[in-house]
Image (cartoon, rainbow, N blue to C red; front, side, top):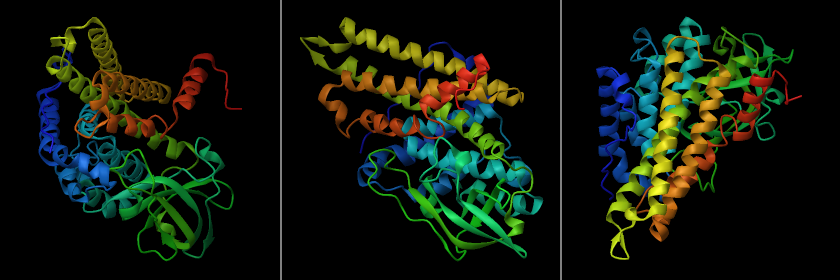
Amino acid sequence: MRTDLYQGHDYYNLDDLLTEEHKLIRETAREWVKKEVSPIIEDAAEKCVFPRHLLPGLGEIGAFGPYIPEEYGGPGLDQISYGLIMQELERCDSGLRSTASVQSSLVMYPIWKYGSEEQKQKFLSKLATGEMMGCFGLTEPDHGSNPGGMTTHFKEDGDDVILNGAKMWISNAPFAHVAVVWAKNEAGRIKGILVERGMDGFTTPTMHGKWSLRASDTGELIFDNVRVPKTNILPGRDGLGAPLSCLDSARYGIAWGAIGAALDCYDTALRYAKERIQFDRPIGQFQLQQKKLAEMITEITKAQLLTHRLGQLRDEGRATSPQISMAKRNNVDMALTVARDARQMLGGMGITGEYSIMRHMMNLESVVTYEGTHDIHLLITGLDVTGLNAFV
């Protein structure tokens, strides 16, 4: 098993902007990851299994709904804390962070923001500990970047609704106890519905054959005349803006998480460059290798500054969707570039499971696509700066 030697990189002294609580939260997450996840993650990825025994530990370090108020069982932390936890999780593996950010931003967030008091009391505290797990059903087989075109629908039947349709590429689906499902009513209005495992006609088949996010469970959600009580409909908000607001929270977490993946690749490449001897000297002494390392830490630092400021805006309630979109796109693209350059520095060893770089590269190919593709986020920024809508 690989020993996790990571210590962190802070070229612009951004730790000076963190509180002591922030640093404690980060260190707690980092040490848990080093002890519980790093020793097993390569094996889990190779076998394409998610280590479900980690779920209670994720709850203990506050990775599930960090910003959920204490009255509902959450830690009640700020957005910077949420980001730091996601960074430490993805520094180990994007699939691990995906599990936590789906639970936090795509399940707990909509229940907290748009759920009834009864729904909050029933689900949030158990979701915070990992006793109960959730998933988010928006993407469909024929509707990815165009979620408004969804065909999953429901009709009223007394005190219940009858739900039909399917969702695809759903993280946590195979083991989730509850799914936050977005579907259209008979008037074509999008609503959020809490579909619970065990309801007749609700199945969650696992998706196989992934070469990315292999240490994360991905599945489908199938609804075949599923009878759901009307009390399971989220009453606080409807329309496409409701699920998109959840994606804002998740994209914010991804922006931080991608930095973690980049930091791990940089750390690996820097360590290797100092130890690997070629032509009677460490390869880190060669100009082209120093160029790669200098560019890596520069881009990482820029992403850290971008994301820290975004966290401040989130805490102040002033962050816009386009700002979040920019950070998600930039940071994931940056992490992919860092991973590819780091892999080249390690030569053939860079493709082996002895190092984490190739796994990060494969994972990031999913991260650059889900929750808004790279190109879609470019168009979101383009719309924001020009006022001209390229989507129509």
